[in-house]
Length: 342
Ligand code: OKP
Ligand code: ZN
Image 1 (cartoon, rainbow, N blue to C red):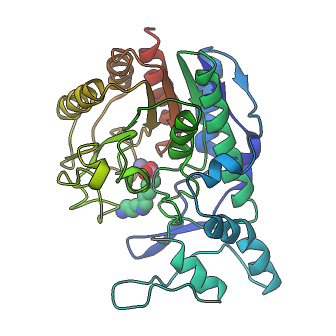
Image 2: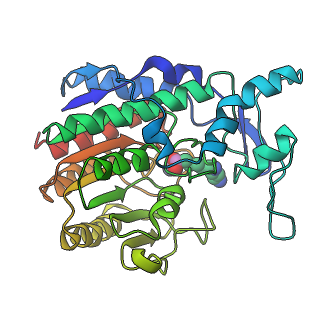
C-alpha cells in the first residue's frame, strides 16, 4: 500500500491547548506523524510519496471561502498586531450571543472555531493545506485503480466542519477526499470513522446528503469530547436521513464491545452499496492513549484492518488521532497490515 506524506506537518507545532481548566502542552504534536512514518518504513508496507498539489479548488468544495481566507490570513494579522505566541480562541458565539462575524481577529477566531484546542501558529495553514493535499494524492491513487492507499495526514481533520475549526482540526481531510471521489463521478462514498472521538465535522458536512454515508464509533459524547454531537439518534436530515450512524460506546470499552459496533457499521456500509470507503483512522482507542478511555490493544488493530478489508471496497485510510506517541505507529500500521492480510 502506498503512503502519502508531507514533511510540512512539522510547520504546525502548537504550544498549548485548553483542556480540563488548564493550558496543557499540545497532545497533537509532530512526533505523532514521525512515529507513524518510521513504522511504515520499518514494516515496508510500500513506498512513501510526497503529495501532488491539487490547489484550493477541492478544498473549497468542503470549506467556505470566508473560512479559508480567515484561516490562511490569521497568523499575518496576528503578527501585524504584534501578537505573541499562538493564536487560541477564548470567546465563542454561544446561545445568548449574536452569531455574527466581528471585525476583530479574536472575535473572528471565536466565530470560526468551537473549542480552545486548535491553536494557529506560523505554519498551521501550510501544514493543514499540505495534509489536505496528502489526502487528495492518496485519493487520486485509488481513483486511478489502487485498492488502497494511506494518507498520513497531520494535523487531523474530522472535527473540522465547513467553516469551523476545533479539536486539533482545521481542514477536513476525509471530507475533502470523499467529495473528490464524487466530483470524479462516483455516486456513493462511505466514511467509517474509527477515531476515539466522534467526527462531528464530517457528520455535519454530509448530514443532509445521501451520497456520503457516515458511520462513527466513539466515546459516548454524553461524557466525552466533543459532547455536543455524536449521539445514536442522529440519523441524518432531509435527503440525508438514514445515511448517518453513530455508535457511542461507554468509557472503558474494549475490543469485544468495539468490534460489535464495527460489525454493525460495516453492515450499514455494505447495505448502502458504497463504491469506495474512506476510513478516518484514529488510533486513540488504544488502552494507553493519554486522553482517551477505550481499551483496545495493539493486536486488535490487525483484526480491525481485516474486518474493514472484508467489505471488499477500495479503501482510503486517512490519519486522524492517536496520542500514545510511541505506540501509534504500531497501531496505525497494524490496521493497514490487517487490511492487506499480513
Ligand atoms: C482530536 B481527535 C479531553 C479534552 C479533549 C480535544 C480532543 C481532540 C481530539 N478531556 N480535547 O479526534 O483525536
Ligand atoms: Zn480522537
